[in-house]
Picture (cartoon, rainbow, N blue to C red):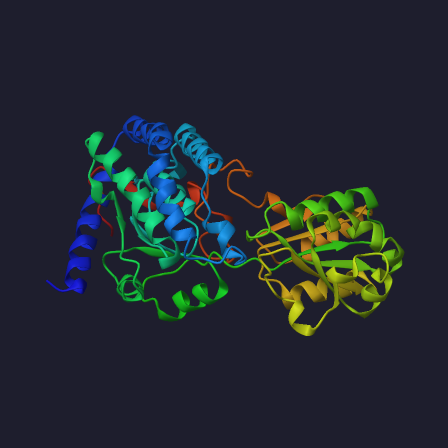
Length: 419
C-alpha cells in the first residue's frame, strides 16, 4: 500500500468515527476530556522530552521558538483549558429557530457538527490539545497536519490522546495526525468527501498556500497585523499600560501589537508613551516625526527609522513600528490599508472618536481603551479556540464551540403532501 493509499484508508476511518461521535452522550465526552486533563501531568515528562527534540532543532532567536516551547506551566494551563471546555454547555442540538407552518408542518433549525475538521498548523503543539478538545466537545472528528518543527511534540500528544480514548472505550480514529511531510498536506487539501472543512493556523504564507491549493472548503484564521491608535484625547497612563501589555505580554502570538499610531497633537507624549518598552528591549521602527521626537529619549540601539516594509508587517517578536497621523481619518485609512482584519484598538477619551473607530474599523475584534492581547477564545469565555477567523463567512473572531457547528432543518408532518 502506498503512502497515499494508507492516508486515504485512515481518512475513511476518521469519517466513520465522526458518525459515532454524534451519538455520544455529553457526559461520556466530558468524562473523556477530564480524564485527558488529569493524565497530562503524568505524561508531562514524555511530552517535554519530545518537545526538547523539536526545540533542539530550532534557533532560540527564531520567533517561532516561543510558540513551539512547552513547559510544565504551559501544560498545566492546557489541562486547565481542557477542563474548562468540558465544563461548557454542549453546542449541539440547540434550537435556533422553530415555527409551525400554515401547511401543518413543524420546522426546527438545530445545531449539528461540521463533521470532520482538518487543521493545518505550524510550530504550536498546544494547538493539538486545543483542537481535539474543542472538536470532540462539538461532535467533530479531527485530522491534524502539524509542521515538521513540532513533529516529535505532536506525536507524543496524539499518542496520549489516543490512549485515553481507548481507555474510555472510544474510537481512536476520532483524531488522526498526518505525517509531517509536505506531501501529506497536499493529500489533505484535496480530501473532498473525507474532510468537511480545513482551518489553517499559522503564517500568512501558510494561509495563502491553503487557500490557493485546497479543494476542501477553508475557514481562514488569519495572521495578525495589529494596530493601536492613540488619539489626541487618549489617557497617557492608559496608553503606557496598554501598549506595553499588547506588545510585550507574549510577542510571538497573533494578537500582539505591531504598529502604534499616534495623533500628532500628542507627539510630545510619545517618549513617555513608549518608555515602559525599554524594559523589554523592544526595537522601534519610527517614521520621521516619531524618530526625531524619540532621539535621545529612547535607547539609541533600539531606535531605527522606519521603512515602508515596517508597516503592514506581523513582527512576532519584540519589534514594532510607530506612525504619526494628523487625524482620526488618517489613522483609519492607515489601518484599512495595512490591517489583516484580526484585532485593532483605539485609546481615547472622546466618545465620538471611540464610536467612529468601533464602527469604521473592519476587523474581527475591535477594542477601546484596552489591550488587543485579549483576542483569545478563553478570554472571550469560549473555553479554548481553534483560531481567530478573519473572514466573514460562517465564523469571525475566536472560533470556540459554537463556531465549530453548522445547522440542519428538522421538518415534521402528519401525512402532508405538497400541492
